[in-house]
Image (cartoon, rainbow, N blue to C red; front, side, top):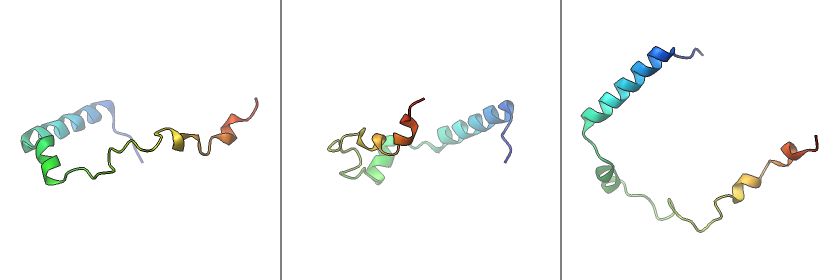
Length: 62
C-alpha cells in the first residue's frame, strides 16, 4: 500500500470538501432522516470503564 504525497492529500481533501459543499445537505436534515437511537448518546455507563481492559501486560515493571 502506498501513501499519497502531501500534494495529493491536499488535493483529495479539497475535492472531498468541494463535493460536500455542493451536496447542500445539513446535519439537521440527516438527523431528521435517521435520528440517533436512545442509547447512542447514553451516559449510563462509565465511559472509561472499557479502557482498563487489556492494559495489564503494558503495566509491567521496567
